[in-house]
Amino acid sequence: MAAALVADGRAVRDASFDAGHAGERIYRDLDLASVQSSLAPRRPSLHYRLQDFEFESVQIEPLSVVQRGKDFTYTFRVLARGDFRHVGKLELLVRFIDRATNQGTYDKQCLLVLDTTPSSTAVRATDAIDVLASGAAVR
Image (cartoon, rainbow, N blue to C red; front, top):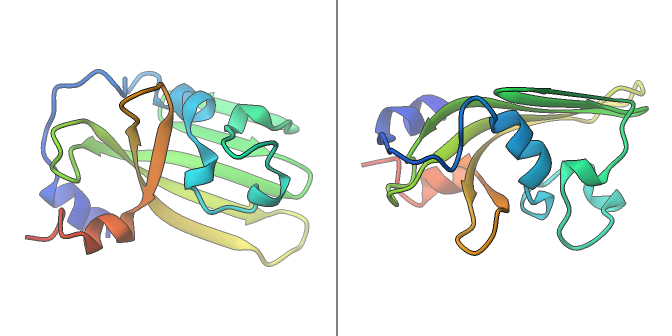
């Protein structure tokens, strides 16, 4: 799936996702209401961010964010940058891993396409399957 999106993506000159700070931007601005995850039952409001939760450890790097808590680990890792929907703006292709660490069996991985919202600094996610299904990456 990632290969199909990257192969059909387009280059865009856009500073909305600085590669040197994408991890920080995901941590600070990703609207988790647009991401299916085990965090949803603990959400503090309709729209919430990773920074709204307290974790035992938070590791932010230029292209990733890893948050570890008592029962779960959440990892967002940037795989590619480009215009994956052909809308003329820069998007990030991100692997999201939501894994139970309390001997549970919950282990979810998915690919997300992240983009910025026009009216705010918020970043929203779309499941890569939905992007592929829309035909933007399959021509």
